[in-house]
Image (cartoon, rainbow, N blue to C red; front, top):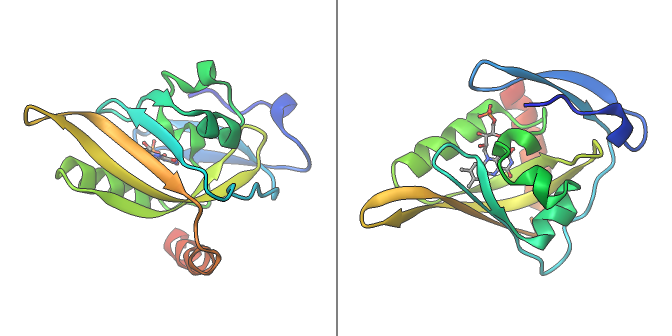
Length: 158
Ligand SMILES: Cc1cc2nc3c(=O)[nH]c(=O)nc-3n(C[C@H](O)[C@H](O)[C@H](O)COP(=O)(O)O)c2cc1C
């Protein structure tokens, strides 16, 4: 995956070399600018079985800061924030690959270096007994839960 570009970043940023689960790494540029999840919105995406994004709704585009063209065909790890522990995504993949529904709180990285918290549900799309891909729907997260997750994820990263 491409490194993040300085020209896209809004505000002061920290540069972090992020290791991905496939052994590759990517330079991410991270600011402390939070975008609140818009009340009542649903941020939706679909992926193929490898986690490559195949569809995204308008709210996904707005919240991520990327254009639809940039999103479609990219790995979902495009949004991976360095404050998210790898174990959270390992759990997501294990749960989905076992055919089950996963839910959790996720801090996502925007194209401009900022972040947004979501409460995400992900399910396998099964047709005639075969997993075709996955769908994720994200809702406004509870502020209390975010505070709990910040602490938990910090501990998991150490
Ligand atoms: C349906 C679906 C939705 C996902 N949504 C996100 C997401 O919003 N943010 C994110 O960082 N990872 C998301 N992932 C997980 C990524 O595929 C990936 O595992 C994660 O970003 C960690 O990157 P890595 O596995 O390359 O290390 C999603 C995966 C699936 C299958």
